[in-house]
Image (cartoon, rainbow, N blue to C red; front, side, top):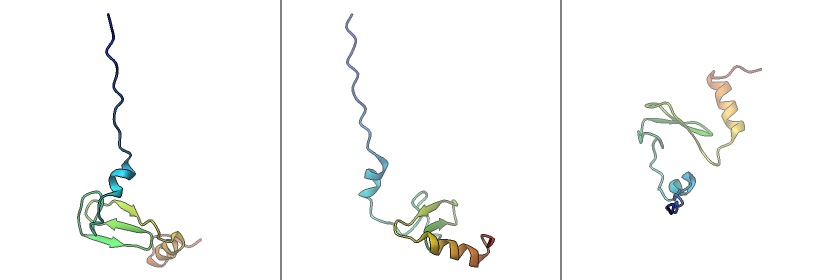
Amino acid sequence: MKRPVATKPKVVPLWRARAHRPPTGGCAKCGSTYVAREPAFIHCRFCGSLSRIPNGSLLDQEVFEIRSGLRLAS
């Protein structure tokens, strides 16, 4: 008995799927516009997700967190 030939599943990497989407100005996960912009992240106030801003400085993010009281200075 001849086995059927398995077809290769077509998988599109996630970054390719997102590369063609225009920026919405809101949350990438839920689409809400109730967001807070931090130096290196977009923080959604609705679902709580954090999306990294590609060119955001992590040093500026650390200073922002220390000044906001989100992180203790050590």
